[in-house]
Length: 239
Image (cartoon, rainbow, N blue to C red):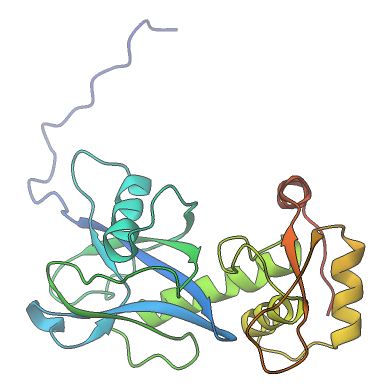
């Protein structure tokens, strides 16, 4: 075996070497008032000015894809040190008019009511909207959102979710509404509660809701050890 790899012969290389740009786009999900929401931004520059899309940016020379996605998340929501999951690379030839741009999409889960939104330097506005009531999005961003929602639906059936979407203390009804919002279905209340309690995922805080006009419900929190174990091992949540 040779000690070094042979040098590639570049003498006949096509001088019109293909060039492309690389970006990251984030699908940032939030949960508020029983609705699954997504963060969208209104572009303030270029041919997409005035149109809505997912928050994203160019990949800089001194950062990884994960670092770029984390930067975008922190710039828009102030959230840092939160898990971002890489979704997919989108490289269709016609996804962006005028030039070849490949984007790598990530998605994250945050509490939409707990963070102050901030539009980027080239953006006019940033808003949370119901994930199923978005305005027309630029380029292939609707396809990216659809793929992220499909991934989230798969995750909710095989991993616990809610740690980054619910307050530290929550009711069983709030947890059920989260699952219903993600899956876009109505769940049977007794059956859902029975399944949740059987997982040993929830711990009673021995507290009740306060400041409500109806009968106060018990408050729960996640057992972080069980939450971590179920995230690593997985399970099947049948509806």
